[in-house]
Length: 223
Image 1 (cartoon, one colour):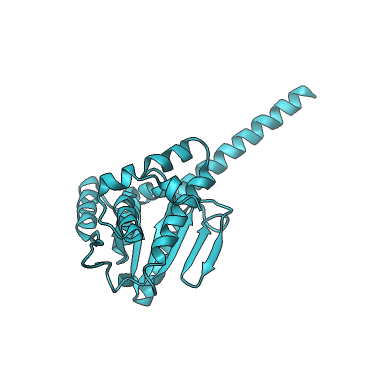
Image 2 (cartoon, one colour):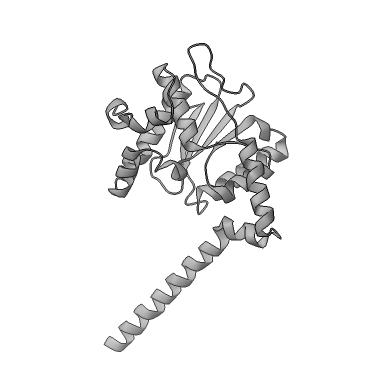
């Protein structure tokens, strides 16, 4: 009896491991790039092109230079979870939902200052799904997709087909994902850069990287 139970546990463990490997095989975009007839030098060149295409914009007392052609902003939530010491502390302290809420609140505050721009924050797996209004929503890739990367690529492909790729901005620093999105014509910005800009807009004060890193996010955005 005990031998049979042990055998069943071993078979279940083997099955779970195989299922996990299959998911990794399907959604590992770095492996996708490796298999897409793209050698190391080509990938390096692709990433250099991505860097050249990162959008630059800022808030100053004189002007807000957010690109007027951008109508939809997608935020890769999981790629933003370590861009500030308090966010990092929340995540490492297993307070993942608090981390997500803080990232979302900041994005929503920024959205209030950019009327007409649709914001969509997406995480790999979160119960905190919400459509706040017609221009701001939070979603989870699962259960329909394995990761937010997978969903972002699908959206980028859809925008490319519709001819609206240049009206989208994706916030991510994931290199492999950035190459795929850039190839579909999406605009890109790094999370740290974008959230520093967001802080500038919200505070009506020019902020730099150090200002962002030293700012008390939890204290200011606690509500």
